[in-house]
Structures are given as C-alpha cells and as structure tokens.
Length: 610
Image 1 (cartoon, rainbow, N blue to C red):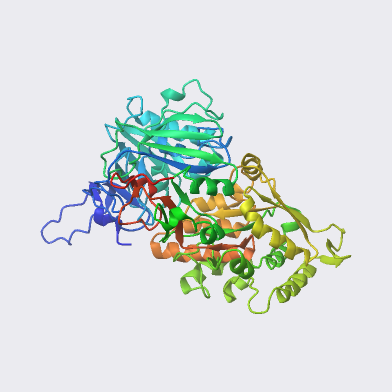
Image 2 (cartoon, rainbow, N blue to C red; image 1 turned 120 degrees about the horizontal axis):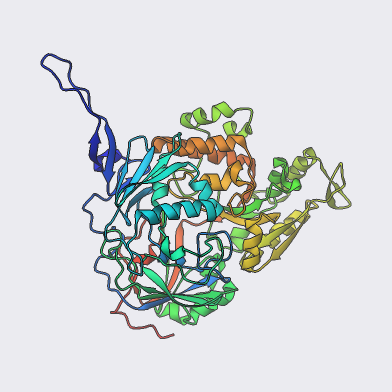
C-alpha cells in the first residue's frame, strides 16, 4: 500500500531550529503524531476525510421491512463478551465500536464512536477523540469513562481472548474531555491501534451492581443500530432497528442497517433448517454443503425465480479448515503420528463423490490470498526462517508442502508410507490393531462433531484409519456440549476452522502461541507450544510494511504446515447464497465479506409466494 501519511493531517511537529543566513539547510521535520479520520495497519486509506459512504453501500437504499435468518443450535446468553454460555446470534448489532472495519480494504478502519484518531509514527500509543453526539439507546452520552471502564472490564472479567489481545497495553487514561489515550508496552506492534479501535463501548452506569462475568438474558444497554425487541431462549430472537440511532447518517453507516427488524430462528439440525428455508420459513441462507448446493435446490421456487441461487466470488482469505489434532493428548504429541494419520483423509474421493467437484484442496493456513506460502521459500522468507534452522523441520527449507493425495495411485501407497512413519514413532500392528510397541496401548481416539453434516467426511476418514489398525470413533453432540468441551480442550480431534483476515496479526497468538495453549476458550485447539512459532508470531505482528507482513506470514505458514497440527480439508473462493427474491443489493460486493448488512427489502418486488 501507499504511505499512510498521504491521508493524515499533522497536528504536532517537533520543534526545528530556524535556518540562519549561511547555515546548513533545515532538515525535514518529523511529525510527532497525526490526527486522522481512519487508520490502516500498513499503507494508505481508500476513503479520504470527506468520503460519503463505503463503495459497497447504496446511499439511496430504501429502509424498512423484516428479514428472518436461521441460526444453529441454541442460546442462553446476551452478553457476547464473556466465556460462559452460548451467545445469541446477531447480538453484536447492539454495540458500537470506536472504529468500523472497511470490508473492501485488507486492514483499514474508520471512526464511528471515535471522531478522530491520533497516533505517532512508531504506533507507541493511540488516542481517540469521541464524537460529542455518540450516545447509548437510553439517550445517555458515551463518555471517556465508559471507554476506560469497558477496556478494564473486558481485560479482567471478559473472555480470555481479551487478555491476550490487550496484553500489550501499558496504560489507558483520560487526556481530554472527550479524548482517551492507550499507551503500549515496548515492542513493535503496528496492529495495536487498529485492535483498540475494535473496542466495543459499554455503559458503565448500566452495569453498576451487576456481575459482568455471569450469563444474562437481560439485554445489555447498547449504542448500535439495533436493540433486542423480543426473544424465546433457545428458539428465536428479534432485533429492531433503533429509529433515532445516533450514527445513522455517518459515512461509515450510510446505506447500511436497512431492515426494520431482523429475526433469528434456531434449528438443531441443518437438514431441517434447509427444508425450512425452502418452505419459506426464513429469507436468506449461506449454503455450507456442496451436496445440498448441487442437489437440493431443484425446486419450483428456484426454477421460476422466487428463490435466487448465486455463487458470489470473493477475495476472503479462506484460512484453514481441517481435522485438528489435540496435541495435549499423548498419542498425538509426535508429529510423525500426525503426519501418518493425515494419509487416511482421501480428499480426491470426497470431492468427487460427496462434493460434486466443488472444492480445492487447502494447502495453506492462509488459502486464497497472497499470504499463502507457495513453492520454496523466497529470499525474504529465508531471512525470517534461517535463525531457526535445526529447530524446525528441514523440509521447511527444501520442499513445498503438499497434503497427501490419492492421485494417481489410490490410497494404498500412502498407507504404506504411513505405517513406516508410525513404526519410526514406536507403533506396530498386532492382531490387526496399531499399538504402542513399548506399552501395548492401542491408538484409538474420538472425533468430536457438533454438526451431523460432517459425518459424511469423518466416517470415511475413520474407515480408512481402520486400514492402519487405528480405531476412530465419530461422535456428534449438541451445540452446548460441543462449545463447552472445545472451550475446555476436552476432545481428541475436532473439525476446526481457523479463519484469517487479509492482514493477520495479534489473533495468531490466540491460534498458535504457547500462552494460549492452556487458556480456556482460546482457539489454540491444537495445543501448539513451540518457541519458534511464538517468535514467528512476534515478528509477524512487528511487520513494518506489507511486503514484510507477506514474507513473515508465509514463513509462519510453512512452519505450521510442516508441524502437521491439522489435516487440511478444502475451500471454495465464493459465497454460496440462496435467498427469496425480495432483496435489493448494491452493485458492488466487498472483496472481504458478503456485506449482507448493506442489502435491503426491494419495495418494487412482489412478496414471493411461499
């Protein structure tokens, strides 16, 4: 990206000596800090100070109407900021944040509650000046005290993720009637100001006398575009657009939040949810199943246009979905075992027989982006990786990672290689069972699922494992039990998704860092505890520019891939969307999101017969 300074206004300059006659020319003045309407991790902002709306929003979109969506499982909590409970879908629309992420830029934010953002070139602190009009739904103004209280509360009583994200903040203080300043600990972390910008601001007064750490079905006081209208615990929840929403006319919101009400109905089974959609029970569905996409929509409503079925391309980094090994379990602590078992997942067979050829094999933790490693390491990557030679697999330097394939020779050659790896790791086959040569312990484990849809890939995987003498049990549990067990790392293997942004940073701590391996609720499901990975994450976060970020991300990607923490699945670089034909949507779809909050009910379209 181009230099961020191109869109920033200088407000404080370092004093410079006057140039006396005959003296040397004055040196360029380095700004001590900048004040701006937006902030990017690296490079320019797309939208200048006077922008009117995001390109993917229609400022003339009509407002009104009701939309119904589906949610899986159940819910028992309206506080989305704590570890306990299962949070209701859509509850984030209650809360405004200091800044808003642009969905058509890789790493940029613009002021929402914050009118301006100030930071020095070294990003050692960031200050937000609050808009004088920002207020909660009860009419009370949003204050600096609310910001500080929210930050302190999330860090001490909120989800453990916040302690990780905010761990590099040294102090927060009020520096003006409407200004709050966050000062960071020493170190290079250009992402921190952007992370702090994502802070939701809660009402200090409304939480007085209440235990923040407990689940609640009392809707918290918010400041966002919607408020809770009604709900039945575990069954449905309805949000109504706030008619006098304080930020409705701000450029970051123009053309967005167009529905009067949004209702989420809960379904315990996705097959039931699919049939409910076709019967008209809800309005829009992002289809997760390639089989359903190929076979389940040959119905009159699709053929006559009452239901639209669209494949919308995107540039969203697809991250990594796969079978995740819990390396806290003794049987999975040897990477040779993990590598051997990965042979049993036959992607080519699954893609042909289950997915109608819809998917590509995932070969990176940052698939579908420039961040994905490819070929052999570049010079820039080698500079990052060379200090760790001897502490990471040599293959990182000499081979391009390729997941096991059954083309062209089928599964058998891979199983033979797998048995050799298992033998090297101390496992042998006795009486058709794979056992530890020293202890006689059989290699057996459970694959924990929360969606029966995944059984069609987990069961063939388990069947192939039998050919290695491994017994894998597939168990599908309800959403509440699954969430509790994954938060406590009480599983052998799960199907996990590590979603990635176009500008990865501090969230990698939550995914892979040693500090998160024993933090309940973290997404380090694999239990990675590797000092090299920790150092690579630190270097990634400290990237001074986009080129360095790409090289350092690719280096981390290679080390994770050759660690065999996950058996990679597959991805598709498009949104599979079906919806009843009552919507309008902008001509431009943002590169990094579907942008559904910019859709609207089209008054020119008749209500589809259902």
